[in-house]
Image 1 (cartoon, rainbow, N blue to C red):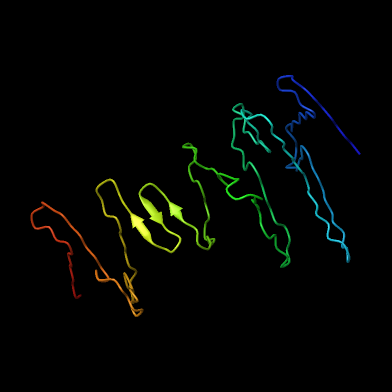
Image 2 (image 1 turned 90 degrees about the vertical axis):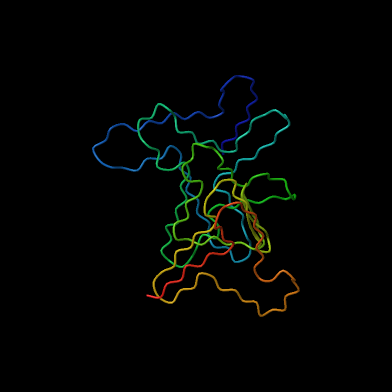
Length: 212
C-alpha cells in the first residue's frame, strides 16, 4: 500500500522519520511509537510464512558499518530504559513460542558471533535464573578454563588460589563419585598427580578426616 524508494548521499537522512514524545499524563497509559498487529487466519491447505517486520540488508561496501536493528538509549535520558528489546508470550494455554530468538545461517561459519556481549561495561553477560542451559557437543573456551565436546575439563589458573572448592550439604553427600566399571586402558591410574615443590612439609594429597 505504501512503497517508498529513496536514494541518498545526505548525512543522517531518513526515509521515514518519526519523532514521538509522551508528555505528562493523568494516568498510566500504554503508548506505541509504532505498532504492528498481525493476525494469521487458519488455512487448511496453505502454510503461510509471515514476518511482522522484515529488514533486508544488501551490503556492497567492505568498510560499511551496518546494523539491521539499532536500539540506542540516548545520553539525554535521566532514567533507566527497561529493556532494549521485549519479547513477551501472553498465551495462557499450552501453545508455546518455539524460539524467542532464532539465529541461523545458510553457510557454515558465515556468522562469527551469534551473540556478542563482550563489552566491558556490561554487568552480567547472561542471566538465566533457574532456567536450563542445554546443548549437544558444544565446547566452552575461556583463557584459563576449557570444556571439550566430549566433556573433558581443563583448568589452567595463572594465579595462586584453590582451583576447585566443593562444600557439601549436610546429610548423605559425596564430594566426588567415580564410576570406573568400564575397562580402562590407561596405565596412569584413575588419578594421576604430577607435582613439583620446594615448600616445607608440602603434600601432594592432604587428608584431614574427623569423626564427630
